Length: 348
Image (cartoon, rainbow, N blue to C red; front, top):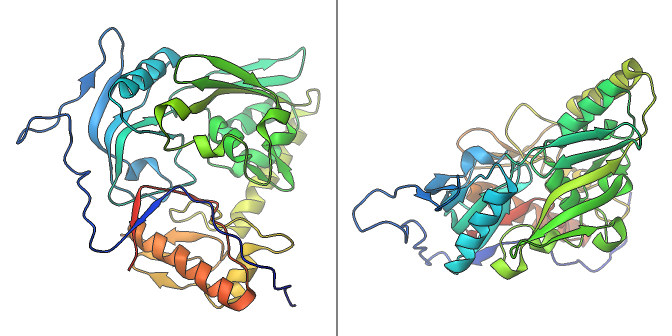
């Protein structure tokens, strides 16, 4: 099989690559007196508790990454808004994360305020319209099971996706030739000034694993923050629940049989270039099983990078760069990462 030699396209990633000699001062918090252990910060009049120097490794599916300088996990939109305002008043950068299933966070950690939306949850099924509304932090896989139990079809493909509703909209998550854009009725998008805009699918400019919100979904200046607070999906009620459950289970089993889920990973690392599968390109480049530190290209599926134990974000980053270099050398194609890289990464 041969590939046409198309010019490579530049990868779109949210990161800063720094020289080896550069030193980051992110490790020392700006919000504690010298020599004292940083203490949690409570925003007056709210239940918001901002934690300094909070580990992010446990919040990403790769299980790597340094600390957040400041960390907030709000349970209400009011607390979310209070936290965003607090950061804006202090001129802090803001990073938004959901389930952390599609992120590679630098070992150096992230400056400013990291806001995790995984506790923003609310699910409502409208039997009259067949519409499902869920908050940003609800797990898309959980919605798939709940819809199946009701005999609602349309979301079976999402059962193996480890992300949240907010992330599914921003990334146009999909599997088995289906995607979020095909089901979306509307998305509520919150700005830092508290205004909420209800966006229809056509306003989101959906593409393959992307949307118009993607550039605003992670680190941004406060004024640019656009956060999906909830989304409404159109499903089809009235099917036999047992049959929908069986179909949903079949989708999950297919993913488990073809993809490695026994070790931490982010799922597919690279987008599939036009007409080709990234995993096939990587395998044909002789990289299946290649390892750097504790990070390995999976034997079962070459578009997965696994944390085999003790991996660092730097190990994974270097493996990503190696894959890009080798595939470009062999096929004249530059693979674009699907995983979002946040923070500073060092070239070696």
